[in-house]
Each structure stands twice: as structure tokens, then as C-alpha cells.
Length: 311
Image (cartoon, rainbow, N blue to C red; front, side, top):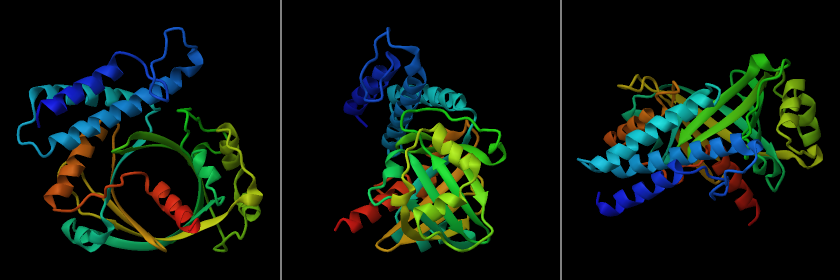
């Protein structure tokens, strides 16, 4: 790793550390209103996470990363930890996408066992109007059937549990190559295996707490335009305990024309950045291939379905 990387790392980290950024990446004047404070904080945390992961990605192939690169890596890692702490102490899950063509190789290399299979159904409009607002509606059928409403607010807004849904409310942070992304969800168990045939049928299955979650996030929904977008066959494995990582989850999603393979680890808030590095190193050690697309697997699946439908 040469001077070009050092200069890039220096510029990127310094740009973020010397001034708050708007959602579009521009500088915010000191006179900006306090109503944007949470959004600025969320943007800064996401940008810090991206810089750290870029640093890690460049450092791993090097036997002796430069002192400057290590210095910035340490600085950014510490700032990400404090940023994750600020996100309501949500559960943190570190995620990497592997090449789905190497599924069986990954199962063998990671000594993955306890295979289970189920089906996952996503509901949205043909134009993915819910996903564009950061909303996901998912119905799962396996040993137990459940319906989940999940929100990933685009503006960094934080959502608190209501009294109706406090018991099933979950706050999570997914740490990927794209940064740290918060989500809020409520899941309810379903007693029936019958699939809703329309958006109107689906809306009748939502609990009062799930409906309120949509309202709190100001998600606009015309249920008459919502339909079942895709049926995904989901296969899960659990790996044997790995050094410094513990047990990992391996999940394969398959739908007509596409596949996604994800490896993930649930960790404490402080361990997120270091776990991402260790998970990358494990994948390299096992000679597995990372997917070039490291977006959330839900976005990959739904956008692939929309693209296929448009042709």
C-alpha cells in the first residue's frame, strides 16, 4: 500500500472529522437548526463506518500496513464504537455476502450444520414504493409462521417502541461494507399458513403496533397496490464456534433467477468493527470468495425481481 492510499485515507478521514456532513455530503453551517442534529449524527456515523471498512479492505492484503493507515484505522474504529453506542444500544450484526456458487464449499469449510429450510415472502408494489421509503413487509413460513414489519429510516430518524408493541420491538444495526445501518421492526406470530392474496388481505394481518410503526415513520401506503413480490427459499446453517467470532450463521436465499449467500455474526456494540475485520480474514483463510455486491440481501432480491419484471 503506497502513498496514494495514505493520501486518500487522510483526506477522507480529515474531511469527516473537521466538520459535520449533510445527508448529501455537503458541509452544514454552524447556524443550521437543531432539528437536523440527529440526521447529521447518523450521516457522520455511516460515513465513518464506510471509511473504516475501506481502510480494512485495503490493509488486509498488506503484511505491514503503514503507521499512518493504522493510526487512522484506530481513530475511525473508536469513533464508530461511540457512534454505535449512541444508537440506543441496538443489537449489532456483522454481515458479509459470499459467492452463492460456493455454497457447499462454504458449508464444508465452516463446518456448518443444523440445516433448516423455510420460505420467505416479501410484499410491496411493483415499483417497490415501500422499499423506497425504507419499509419492508416480510412473511416467513418455517417451523413457526410470522409477519414482520421492518423500517430502515432514510433520514436517520430514531424510532422508539410503543406500549402496544414493546415486547416484540427490535432495534438492530447491520454492519456491512456500506457502513452501519439501523433498522426497527415488530414481528407477530401467525396461526395460519394461508398466504394473503392481496395487499388488503395483508393489511388485515398487521397488529396495531405494526400499523403504528408505519405511522410513526410516516410511511405512506396504498394497500390496494401492494402484492406478493417474491417467494424465496431460505436455507440456514449454524457453524461451529470460530476463534474470536463464536458461532456464525450462514443463510442462502434462492428465488427464480437469483441467489444470495450471507454469513453473519451477532456481537456486542464495541466488537462490531473488529468483528468485521476478523470475519473478512476468516473468509480469506477459508479461501472463500466475497460477493462484489455487499448491499442488504433484501434490497438485492427485491431489486433483482423488479428488474426482471421490467424486461
